[in-house]
Amino acid sequence: QVQLVESGGGLVQAGDSLRVSCAASGRTFSSYIMGWFRQAPGKEREFVAAVSWSGLSTWYADSVKGRFTIFSPDAKNTMYLQMNTLKPEDTAVYYCAAGLYRYGTTQQGASQYDYWGQGTQVTVSS
Image (tube, rainbow, N blue to C red; front, side, top):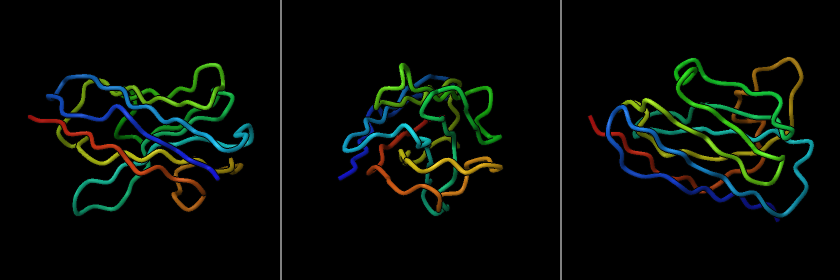
């Protein structure tokens, strides 16, 4: 049984930083990529960032490039999303996900991710 558990969400002000984490358990993830998606009220779930299990490759949505950093130190079963210069439009439930790497894609499709966490709320006040 695969489990992904997010933590670290909260309420911050615009311009602040926040780090959310995802702990994975239940199998070996060496062939997987790990990603973050988010869903704001009334909106569809959208891709935020992804990282290869080795940590050597990363992918970002244009809306977060230069502000967010995804990393998985030491290829252990924990992944982080460092969010800087947060904006009110970053407010959403953030979901951790794991799926197989797909060659020739930007790893942004939610359908390629097989496992999902329950989500953690991030709220950015103006």
